[in-house]
Image 1: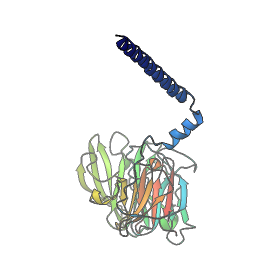
Image 2: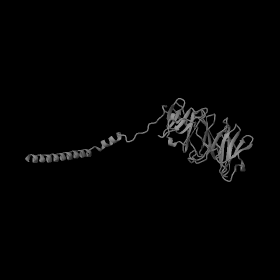
Image 3: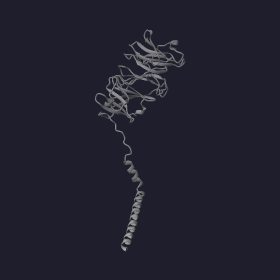
Image 4: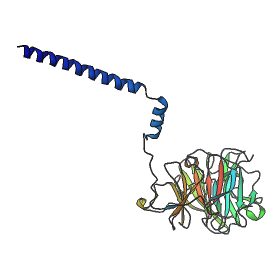
Length: 328
């Protein structure tokens, strides 16, 4: 009987001891947690990654140092992000001549300004610049095949209607021909919008005029004789006028990095594109080498390559920059 009572007491004491040890250990743990150095905790958090940044998948392309150099930078007119401006800048088809709309005050303006042509043909470091004067140039630039004339859309502010003007480069854009003189510029009851589609040869240019709410007429005009021929009548946007397409051939996305705003050069040798990490790239599609341009992707609105892929013009909200692709 005494042995049983003694055993029961020992069991009770043992249980109390276990409870005491458990409480002591718990307190020690809590005390230890309270005494952690806040600075150490911060450092620990900093070196412990909370998220993994995506790695660029360049599809095996070799990444080079930046090979470009900025050779020209100028204010340009601003338009709405979704404006159908038909291109407020454009290169000649066979020469390194760039036309764009510069603000009249050479600082900032909406929608119209002076036409400016920059000639990089002879010396890209010191290009020749020529401008129109006294015209409210809207855009839609098109050089004729020999790059001796340029057509563009102009707003007649007094009448609030549009017309198409052709200027000669030999006169530094001072000699101009209005293709819709006097009342012929009014082709509907509204602003009589116009657009330049293309030159058929050095003298004939194809343009469109608005002929109503949902009507456009396509004309071919001889800039020497003044002869005008009606080619077709279509619904609005039933032609290529006012388009500013990027050059994007069919390509296998599995063979290229994930590309936003891709734009191939005319000879398909170079590709401009942006990525999801706000980077801007030039990819040599022949050598599979690429380098990053020193501009952020979210600032880029439009791009245009020169005919020989030596230069790329990049339009931003209020300015236009030209980079030589290979300076090094």
